[in-house]
Image (cartoon, rainbow, N blue to C red):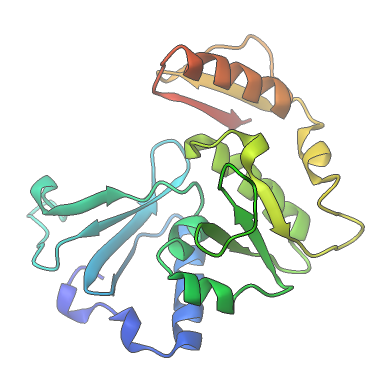
Length: 220
C-alpha cells in the first residue's frame, strides 16, 4: 500500500469494521509486514522496530514517499507511538468511547496509569484467543518491556479471562520461570549467562537508572 489515494480511510467504516481492520493490521505487524492506513485525517505507518517491538508513526496527509519509498522526517506529525506491541499501538489510536465498546470478557485490558486504577482514558487492549491465551500473554509481556516507560509494578490487569487455570495471580510467575533472557546496552549483551525474566528486568532497570537510553531485553 504505497499510494496514499488507495489507502483505507478507516474512520469511514462502521465501528465493527474498524475493529476488524485494526485486528488485521495487528496480525500483519506480527508477521513483520508493513501497515499503512488513514485514520481521523492522519496517515499512519506501522512496522517492526529495530528492537523487536512495534512502532506506529503518524504523518501529515500531504506527506509523499521519496524515491527510496520512505517519508521525509519533516513530514512527521507527532512521532512514533511506541506502545510495545502491535495491539497496544493499534488500539492506542482509539477513543475512550471506542475502548469502552471493547471492554468485554474476551479482551485483555491493561491499564498503564501509575495509580493502577481501571480507566478507559488510558488503557491498552489486547485481544486474547482461547487457544493462544498463555502464549499471547507471554508475548505481550516480553514485548512491552522493550519500550514501556512505566515500571512493571505499575501495570495493572483490569480484566482477564481465565483459561486452563491461568489467572491474573500466577501468569507473571509462569513467564518468569525460564532462564532465557538477556539484556543489551547499546547493542552489546551485558550478562554472561541467560537470566530469568525478573533478573533481566532488574538489570535493565539498573542501567536505566544510570540514564542509559538504548537498553532492552531479548529472549534467546
